[in-house]
Length: 168
Ligand SMILES: NC(=O)c1ccc[n+]([C@@H]2O[C@H](COP(=O)([O-])OP(=O)(O)OC[C@H]3O[C@@H](n4cnc5c(N)ncnc54)[C@H](OP(=O)(O)O)[C@@H]3O)[C@@H](O)[C@H]2O)c1
Image 1 (cartoon, rainbow, N blue to C red):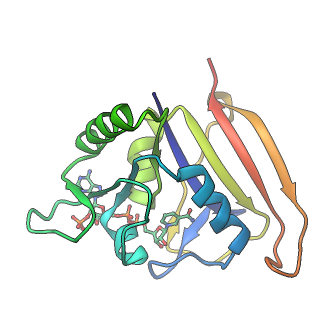
Image 2: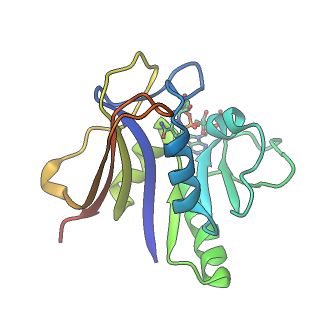
């Protein structure tokens, strides 16, 4: 079973501002849905707040330090290790091969050393942000897939889908 992270990241590594995405990219939202569907998804409490409701078709695991925190349709845990352990149980039952870390900054930073695969949407522009993806060490990651998206009317921004696997 692989621990994977999925993120859309600007040229300056911005991933969010005011607890929202800095851009609206419908194509990338569809890609996110396709990659995560059926898999357990792990997120920080702030990212869950920004979604407002659980993402359907996926076990939503939310990490918080607040022992009172409860929302309908999610599993609440109190550490990344607890999240991973629950996600492994769910993946085993559902027969899926990946556990997905879906953000935000705090959770990406903590999970990066444990991650084996990164699904990165590289948005080819810098954005104002208050949340950033951690800097990657190129020696640790190998690009195994790349798809460059041409700018179209729907998305109006150039971006690329990258899959990076941890180097052996
Ligand atoms: N571009 C993308 O792909 C993408 C994806 C996801 C999110 N985002 C953006 O990222 C931003 C949110 O990131 P963020 O870093 O502010 O928040 P976050 O990582 O989503 O959530 C942070 C919260 O998670 C909990 N937490 C973090 N580490 C913990 C630990 N070790 N143990 C227990 N609980 C822990 C705490 O919750 P409590 O405060 O409840 O204790 C903390 O406040 C937003 O702007 C969002 O839109 C972007």
